[in-house]
Image (cartoon, rainbow, N blue to C red; front, side, top):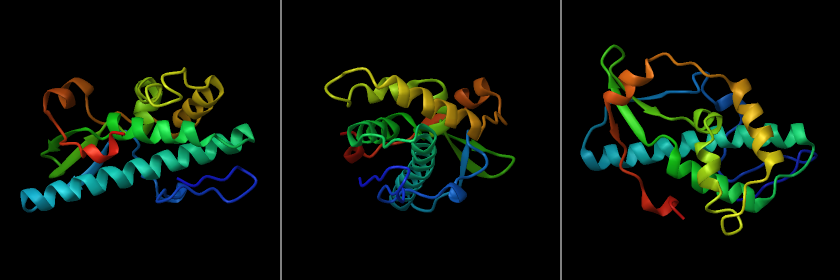
Length: 169
């Protein structure tokens, strides 16, 4: 992962720009898949793209707000944690004929789950830096929280997403 501070061009390999992030930050949709292997690959690519886009925007904005570069160890820990804690559940929405994947990176930052997991990857279990945590949560909060589907209903109708082990660090 390459990262440059707020005074230079922000760049994380494969991370999207702010304009590429969906306005619906709590749920994301994918049309029904074809074969199981193709669907699995499509699901993994979708998860990876969504995580990279949302996390890239959050890191960029947090770095700009703080006026300093976020250290690469913290970014690495967040990326690993995000791949373990986000977009790992899905449910089929019959009204839109789509699978909806959740929780998003924004939702995971707002409920601290991504930061709790990032601690496992950050300097051998040290606490994640409070200044990073607070600024990233602030940015995530401004990105919104649109609960369009009742959380209990969604949880009851969900299945786990088969996770690709290569991201589990």
